[in-house]
Length: 486
Image 1 (spheres, rainbow, N blue to C red):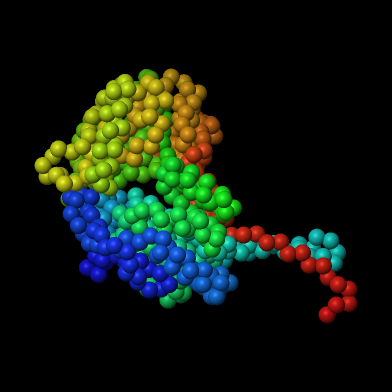
Image 2 (cartoon, one colour):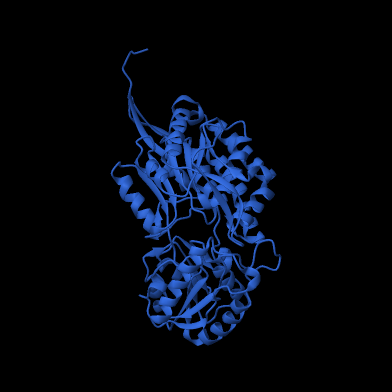
């Protein structure tokens, strides 16, 4: 990792050292782990120009077998550097080693799946009437602007980049400053694959939003893929609409666990705990809402509270750590303010948690798990994405009430159903407004299937066959045959 401590941009197949040099911080102790060049609109424009040149002048868009080979070899390259990816996520992103390993393994799986997709962009031909033939082609739209979040930067970057490259697009990837070291490592791995031409994949890092705005506004970038907050997603969609460009958005979530009275507690409780503490709740599918049937509510409060109070917060370097830090100290203050407001608004404290006061965690962005009981679904702590280890608990009596409570939010990314009833899971799942439903599990997604949200949780899908759709254009060619023509 020594050669990755100074992170640069990767544009046109070259390292670009421009922008102010700033520090990359380990959120577990607040100490610098390296530096990065903080880019903006200048670097974004360079990257767009390089990607556009590679798209128009190269053969990448025309050669699906090249793309299949390149993506397959990129998967091999990641497999060879997987330990480096995991180490970087632990150090820069604050993930525990288990969490970082879980994220990293999706990278290889996603790339191998995308390698197969690269040859699935064919169209169709039909003799519509005698003497006339119609052809439907699917061709890459051009330069794809990919705006990546900091919370799972290694995989979420690949989740967007892999289908874009499989479709034949070239790409400009905007990486957040909190993941500058992960970005530099990704560029080094991509650069090691000779089948990926220079300019096909370009990366710049920025702490601000000027470069991202340029991508959204540029006439040379016909498609934007963004993963992040619903607020920012709306701004991107509004700006992109002015240019009639397509937008794929995976936005916020407020995942409910629907716990029915016949749920299997021994298998459920560890998952309820982890759904809150994985990456300290900084996950779009964090299980932040707990809806529990009245007859088992007291038992669940008692047993879950006992588990949450025993969660050990700490750095990834400590093997006893159950939960890592938030991304920075500002996030600790933000999450705590939301909890304090909820308590003032009537939420009942079951487990308070809160900012860590443990001496050995001083300097780190640690926030201990919090569990609040609420009766009003309209409270901000229920409606807004907290992005921290805070879970609310509400009680329901009937299946219909549980469904109504689960859907009483602007979000619709995921939901979980806990029951041993054979018929209830699919019956309830059909009524839930969510893109991913996990039955007797949580966030049980597969890269081979479509992932995305309902309502304000987004537009379009990543993963699965549909992941190509944002990056392909349809073209109909109608050919009338002239009698006697040669």
